[in-house]
Length: 183
Image 1 (cartoon, rainbow, N blue to C red):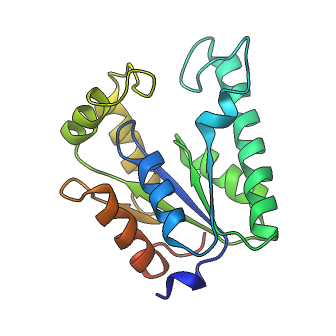
Image 2: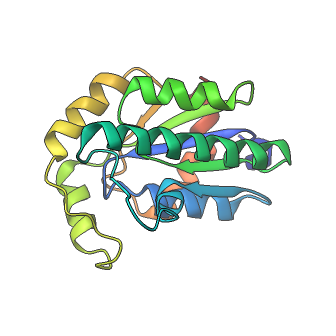
């Protein structure tokens, strides 16, 4: 694929430490024009009362996930409408959330790439992050099972265990059109 042909949105999903932020940023920088929209950046706008999307109380966590997804879709749609391909850095936790995001961005093209290095690689990457960027997370096995159940047949399940972030971004750009059909 000619990387200048990419349009619409590529949702870059995966577990904590999978490389969503690093890879989506590097992929965007390789294109002549592109944007990265990060769920974490939008969540950080809530200065009081934030509840992590997998946190408690569950009802409030779900409200925060919906708010974040609505904001992500609106911002991504604005960039797309002005000719910027978007790499959306988000941990969509289930198929319902993915379908909700895709629906919010309709009729714009949306693809899903789930970065899927091994759990050990994710844990190692998370452990070596800057303390402000690392997650205290011990649910890798359950999250991987959930992601495989919900996204195993959707988009591109991309094992990046043996790749550098640069190699991952380059391969993502060169293969996304063939491996991640428009949802």
